[in-house]
Length: 427
Image (cartoon, rainbow, N blue to C red; front, side):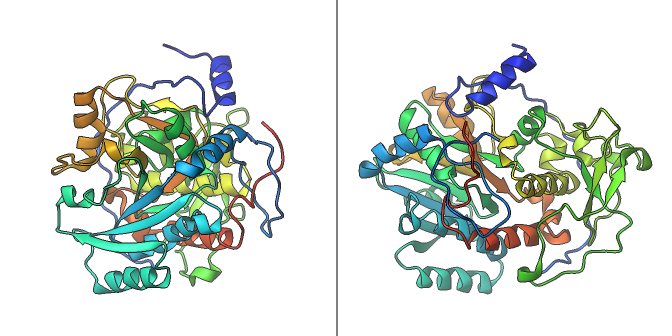
């Protein structure tokens, strides 16, 4: 079915509870080049009570409909989060958002369990750090571990049938205020969903959706820059409006992976200004190669693309325009049982307890089991988070300042109350 621009606009206006839509998958498999060695250091708005924020940016408020559902659900709701932990640099950013969304801070999260992923942990300092964090917040954080590769044991702690659970990867580095409320409200209302994904920036499928709705902007490597000077976390500037611009006519047009910019060792990014009348295009950026599909080479394999995706998102945050990433609640299985990345997803305990999740948990939970029981999974378009990158995009963490920027952003947000950054306005 082809959707007209008017119909797409109407769907956006109903974003959370609209009829789910489907988009086709295209598979691209060309790998990018291998980056050099590691260098880096460790406005759709609902009426709510506006609280004064000390910061100069704001977020879309939670929808009144979601809040109403959550208020009715609270007496029976027990929301548990578990994190497959392996890297303290990422988790140091993530845990600020988890504490922000705790019941003690006015959120919904009852408890967080860090499951140590022994396949990833290569440093005893990572273990010491997470244990110290749990000791600091003993009423909220717990730590456990499982044998390497034993996915059954990773999910073995799911023991309460009527509890709601949310699994989060340790490289989720941003969670928009209201994301937990949006996910809880949708799963509580739609008991037919099997799993329910957040809306993920840096996701092989959702990047294409964000592009379809015009959320992305053209960024590329600043090849004239002599390199990024690493700064302490409290001195990093996540804002991007001060960075240089370049006219699209002055840089080589990217037609294939081979046309990608060269090494991005210690390099920052710059904004690509399009020709007049073509401001919404992505020419000159690695994102020009992005396709819609679960294994698109740009979204899944290219660290160049991943960096550009995150710089585009920083721009949206700085402009108070994160809602441009929103989309209607979407049925991920409406076109068949195809794999999707499980960076952050919600489910009921009874739907996962006792399953034989052997080997590839993502394949099993998104394809094998739901196809067997004939149940669909969905995605909540206003439950917005950011995922740093896949293992194929490790250079985003090790060769750019993207993680440092997310760290700095989370430190600023940490100064405010949950939902205290809501932009004024109405739907």
